[in-house]
Amino acid sequence: MAQRFLMEERDAQQLSPLQLAYMGDSVWEIIIRTRLIAQHMNVKHMHRECIAQVNAAAQAKSAGKIRPIMTEKETDVFLRGRNAHPHHAAPRHQDPGDYAEATGFEAVLGYLYLTGQDDRIEEMIHLILEETS
Image 1: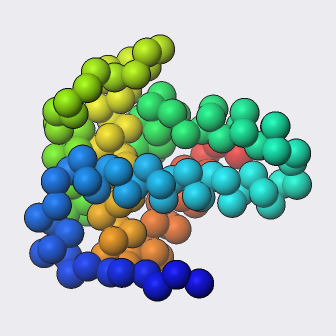
Image 2: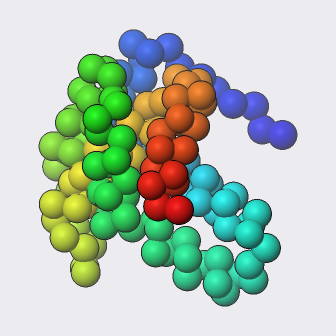
């Protein structure tokens, strides 16, 4: 198994919000793929379902569910991510507002992952999935 490299909170806070979102996007996709594997779906169906859940609109919706429970630090990371200006436009067929919210969501997941706050990620994921089930 690969070694996990954790960061001190102060070091993670110094990363750009887009770097945090880059990591958070991977974290979210791994979580969704793991859930889909557990449902014993075939690969074609897993891929379709993953695309439906790992996109700006779905992530923006997830962000809305966890915003009320975010700590002050998490809110700061979220806002930095949401307000970051990537060097590209939102992908086609994605609302720019959803894309910004999704970037904030991903930044929070990236921050929590890099700082080893797995219990907090789990708490947020349970809240998101509880309301979608």
